[in-house]
Length: 249
Image 1 (cartoon, rainbow, N blue to C red):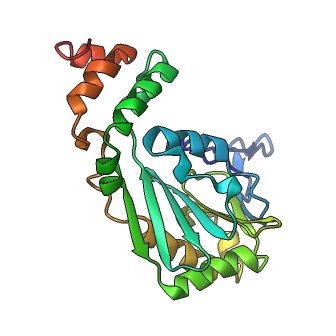
Image 2 (cartoon, rainbow, N blue to C red; image 1 turned 180 degrees about the vertical axis):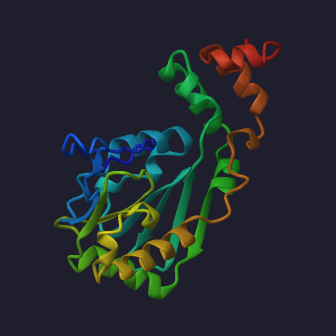
């Protein structure tokens, strides 16, 4: 199974060919099935990586999924990463968007940069929550579908050539239940012939449309202390040193 890390997102392609006779010098492609139904065991979910990303951007106490019972969690990774939580006895979903931080991958010392940015972000938490967290009523029919895919023993779909994932799980007090699926456009033609696939694709599209609320204002430089972040944290980022020489301490 694939890994969510996020955060964070590379595609894996495998090309194989076969040689024909001496007269047929062109390589012929081998039909490899990249997508397949697999047991839903959650092996592709990298909880620690997601939680680490979450903690830089929000409050670590907001996300303690290993301790929670009867709460559905949904991770959706596209260009950004989204986390949805839903208590079983509620129809109000809490959705977070794990926004990116400009040039964080260019930090000279990543740990120092993240720690610096985290401190500045935590100063603005009311604004961060206003822009990057939404409580949204979830349609009952979609909740029922989510329960079906998680609790009725449906298989997951493993696809090697896609980094856009829908991953869900719930701890019912005794054990975890999982479901994982790649973006429909990443699925190969072979699996699309399976009679089950239309239900899967419909569910994926509905979940993606619901989770991807309007978070266009959810940006680190919209929190009200952009210059302070650059001034204090730019010393750990070589591009910021170059682009903001008058701000970086």
